[in-house]
Image (cartoon, rainbow, N blue to C red; front, top):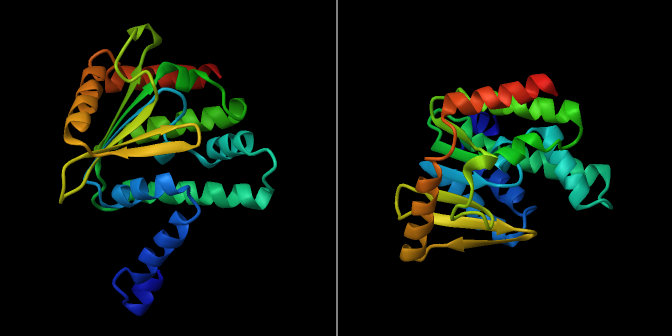
Length: 211
Protein backbone atom coordinates (compact mmCIF):
# COMPACT_ATOMS: atom_id res chain seq x y z
CA UNK A 1 0.00 0.00 0.00
CA UNK A 2 2.84 2.38 0.81
CA UNK A 3 4.47 1.61 -2.53
CA UNK A 4 1.22 2.52 -4.28
CA UNK A 5 0.79 5.75 -2.32
CA UNK A 6 4.38 6.94 -2.80
CA UNK A 7 5.02 5.31 -6.22
CA UNK A 8 8.18 3.71 -4.87
CA UNK A 9 8.27 0.70 -7.21
CA UNK A 10 8.33 -1.99 -4.52
CA UNK A 11 10.78 -0.29 -2.12
CA UNK A 12 8.64 -0.75 0.98
CA UNK A 13 7.81 -4.32 0.02
CA UNK A 14 11.51 -5.17 -0.33
CA UNK A 15 12.32 -3.53 3.00
CA UNK A 16 9.53 -5.45 4.72
CA UNK A 17 10.75 -8.73 3.23
CA UNK A 18 14.30 -8.01 4.39
CA UNK A 19 13.17 -7.18 7.94
CA UNK A 20 10.99 -10.28 8.06
CA UNK A 21 13.83 -12.49 6.86
CA UNK A 22 16.00 -11.38 9.78
CA UNK A 23 13.64 -13.14 12.19
CA UNK A 24 14.39 -16.51 10.60
CA UNK A 25 17.48 -18.67 11.23
CA UNK A 26 20.42 -18.02 8.93
CA UNK A 27 19.98 -21.37 7.18
CA UNK A 28 16.44 -20.38 6.16
CA UNK A 29 17.18 -16.95 4.74
CA UNK A 30 18.69 -18.00 1.42
CA UNK A 31 15.79 -20.38 0.90
CA UNK A 32 13.33 -17.51 1.49
CA UNK A 33 15.12 -15.28 -1.00
CA UNK A 34 14.90 -18.07 -3.56
CA UNK A 35 11.20 -18.56 -2.80
CA UNK A 36 10.49 -14.92 -3.64
CA UNK A 37 12.05 -15.34 -7.10
CA UNK A 38 10.97 -18.90 -7.81
CA UNK A 39 9.00 -19.86 -10.89
CA UNK A 40 8.57 -23.40 -9.57
CA UNK A 41 8.65 -24.92 -6.08
CA UNK A 42 8.37 -28.63 -5.30
CA UNK A 43 8.12 -29.77 -1.68
CA UNK A 44 8.19 -33.07 0.14
CA UNK A 45 7.32 -33.24 3.84
CA UNK A 46 7.16 -36.45 5.89
CA UNK A 47 6.31 -34.81 9.22
CA UNK A 48 4.40 -31.51 9.11
CA UNK A 49 2.38 -29.36 6.74
CA UNK A 50 4.90 -27.25 4.77
CA UNK A 51 5.23 -23.66 5.97
CA UNK A 52 3.78 -22.23 2.76
CA UNK A 53 0.51 -24.04 3.50
CA UNK A 54 0.22 -23.70 7.28
CA UNK A 55 -2.65 -21.92 8.99
CA UNK A 56 -2.03 -19.51 11.85
CA UNK A 57 -3.32 -21.98 14.43
CA UNK A 58 -1.22 -24.83 13.11
CA UNK A 59 1.94 -22.70 12.97
CA UNK A 60 1.29 -21.35 16.48
CA UNK A 61 1.00 -24.89 17.85
CA UNK A 62 4.30 -25.91 16.26
CA UNK A 63 6.09 -22.83 17.55
CA UNK A 64 4.64 -23.28 21.04
CA UNK A 65 5.84 -26.88 21.26
CA UNK A 66 9.22 -25.95 19.82
CA UNK A 67 9.81 -23.11 22.28
CA UNK A 68 7.65 -23.47 25.41
CA UNK A 69 9.32 -20.47 27.08
CA UNK A 70 8.45 -18.04 24.29
CA UNK A 71 6.09 -15.21 25.19
CA UNK A 72 2.74 -14.76 23.47
CA UNK A 73 4.16 -11.73 21.67
CA UNK A 74 7.15 -13.68 20.39
CA UNK A 75 4.92 -16.49 19.16
CA UNK A 76 2.59 -14.02 17.45
CA UNK A 77 5.53 -12.48 15.57
CA UNK A 78 6.79 -15.89 14.48
CA UNK A 79 3.36 -16.82 13.18
CA UNK A 80 3.01 -13.48 11.39
CA UNK A 81 6.37 -13.92 9.68
CA UNK A 82 5.56 -17.47 8.63
CA UNK A 83 2.24 -16.42 7.11
CA UNK A 84 3.98 -13.54 5.32
CA UNK A 85 6.02 -16.11 3.41
CA UNK A 86 2.80 -17.36 1.85
CA UNK A 87 2.45 -14.15 -0.17
CA UNK A 88 4.55 -15.81 -2.88
CA UNK A 89 1.54 -18.01 -3.68
CA UNK A 90 -0.97 -15.15 -3.73
CA UNK A 91 0.36 -12.86 -6.45
CA UNK A 92 -0.91 -12.50 -9.98
CA UNK A 93 1.79 -14.87 -11.23
CA UNK A 94 2.52 -17.44 -8.49
CA UNK A 95 5.13 -20.15 -9.03
CA UNK A 96 4.12 -23.64 -10.07
CA UNK A 97 3.76 -25.35 -6.71
CA UNK A 98 3.95 -29.12 -6.26
CA UNK A 99 3.63 -30.64 -2.80
CA UNK A 100 3.81 -34.23 -1.56
CA UNK A 101 3.03 -34.84 2.10
CA UNK A 102 3.08 -38.12 3.98
CA UNK A 103 -0.28 -39.48 5.08
CA UNK A 104 0.95 -39.22 8.67
CA UNK A 105 0.98 -35.42 8.28
CA UNK A 106 -2.77 -35.20 7.83
CA UNK A 107 -3.48 -37.87 10.44
CA UNK A 108 -1.42 -36.29 13.23
CA UNK A 109 -3.57 -33.89 15.25
CA UNK A 110 -1.59 -30.69 15.75
CA UNK A 111 -3.04 -28.11 18.11
CA UNK A 112 -6.25 -30.02 18.79
CA UNK A 113 -9.19 -31.10 16.59
CA UNK A 114 -10.39 -27.58 15.73
CA UNK A 115 -6.94 -26.37 14.66
CA UNK A 116 -6.39 -29.51 12.62
CA UNK A 117 -9.80 -29.29 10.97
CA UNK A 118 -9.00 -25.73 9.91
CA UNK A 119 -5.64 -26.86 8.55
CA UNK A 120 -7.17 -29.70 6.55
CA UNK A 121 -9.74 -27.29 5.15
CA UNK A 122 -6.93 -24.94 4.10
CA UNK A 123 -5.16 -27.81 2.33
CA UNK A 124 -8.34 -28.55 0.39
CA UNK A 125 -8.57 -24.90 -0.65
CA UNK A 126 -4.94 -24.88 -1.79
CA UNK A 127 -5.49 -28.08 -3.75
CA UNK A 128 -8.07 -26.34 -5.95
CA UNK A 129 -5.62 -23.69 -7.14
CA UNK A 130 -4.68 -24.20 -10.81
CA UNK A 131 -0.96 -23.69 -10.14
CA UNK A 132 -0.85 -26.11 -7.20
CA UNK A 133 -0.59 -29.91 -7.22
CA UNK A 134 -1.06 -31.42 -3.76
CA UNK A 135 -0.53 -35.15 -3.30
CA UNK A 136 -0.61 -37.42 -0.28
CA UNK A 137 1.84 -40.29 -0.05
CA UNK A 138 0.00 -43.19 1.63
CA UNK A 139 1.66 -45.03 4.48
CA UNK A 140 1.36 -48.19 2.41
CA UNK A 141 3.79 -46.79 -0.18
CA UNK A 142 6.73 -48.42 1.55
CA UNK A 143 10.41 -47.50 1.32
CA UNK A 144 11.52 -44.56 -0.83
CA UNK A 145 14.56 -42.36 -1.38
CA UNK A 146 13.41 -39.34 0.63
CA UNK A 147 12.62 -40.93 3.97
CA UNK A 148 15.43 -39.07 5.76
CA UNK A 149 13.75 -35.64 5.85
CA UNK A 150 11.92 -32.80 4.14
CA UNK A 151 13.06 -31.21 0.91
CA UNK A 152 12.26 -28.26 -1.34
CA UNK A 153 13.30 -27.90 -4.97
CA UNK A 154 13.45 -24.24 -5.98
CA UNK A 155 13.72 -23.13 -9.59
CA UNK A 156 14.39 -19.49 -10.46
CA UNK A 157 14.34 -17.82 -13.92
CA UNK A 158 18.08 -17.23 -14.04
CA UNK A 159 19.72 -20.38 -12.74
CA UNK A 160 19.56 -24.14 -12.28
CA UNK A 161 17.34 -25.62 -9.55
CA UNK A 162 18.67 -25.79 -6.02
CA UNK A 163 17.48 -27.93 -3.14
CA UNK A 164 16.82 -26.97 0.45
CA UNK A 165 16.79 -29.75 3.04
CA UNK A 166 15.76 -29.28 6.64
CA UNK A 167 16.15 -31.10 9.93
CA UNK A 168 15.61 -30.20 13.59
CA UNK A 169 16.74 -26.56 13.85
CA UNK A 170 19.06 -27.04 10.89
CA UNK A 171 18.96 -26.71 7.15
CA UNK A 172 21.18 -26.65 4.10
CA UNK A 173 21.16 -25.51 0.49
CA UNK A 174 22.33 -28.14 -1.99
CA UNK A 175 23.41 -26.79 -5.38
CA UNK A 176 25.94 -29.37 -6.55
CA UNK A 177 24.49 -30.49 -9.93
CA UNK A 178 24.73 -34.26 -9.50
CA UNK A 179 23.21 -34.13 -6.00
CA UNK A 180 20.38 -31.89 -7.21
CA UNK A 181 19.74 -34.25 -10.12
CA UNK A 182 19.63 -37.34 -7.88
CA UNK A 183 17.34 -35.76 -5.30
CA UNK A 184 15.07 -34.32 -7.99
CA UNK A 185 14.83 -37.79 -9.49
CA UNK A 186 13.83 -39.19 -6.10
CA UNK A 187 11.08 -36.57 -5.90
CA UNK A 188 9.83 -37.46 -9.38
CA UNK A 189 9.76 -41.14 -8.44
CA UNK A 190 7.74 -40.28 -5.33
CA UNK A 191 4.94 -38.78 -7.41
CA UNK A 192 4.08 -42.26 -8.74
CA UNK A 193 3.05 -44.02 -5.48
CA UNK A 194 1.51 -40.78 -4.19
CA UNK A 195 -2.25 -40.45 -4.56
CA UNK A 196 -3.61 -38.36 -7.41
CA UNK A 197 -4.81 -34.80 -6.76
CA UNK A 198 -8.42 -35.93 -6.58
CA UNK A 199 -7.74 -38.99 -4.43
CA UNK A 200 -5.58 -36.88 -2.09
CA UNK A 201 -8.37 -34.33 -1.73
CA UNK A 202 -10.85 -37.09 -0.94
CA UNK A 203 -8.61 -38.49 1.79
CA UNK A 204 -8.11 -35.04 3.33
CA UNK A 205 -11.84 -34.30 3.19
CA UNK A 206 -12.70 -37.64 4.80
CA UNK A 207 -10.30 -37.00 7.69
CA UNK A 208 -11.60 -33.45 8.12
CA UNK A 209 -15.20 -34.62 8.29
CA UNK A 210 -14.30 -37.36 10.78
CA UNK A 211 -12.40 -35.03 13.10
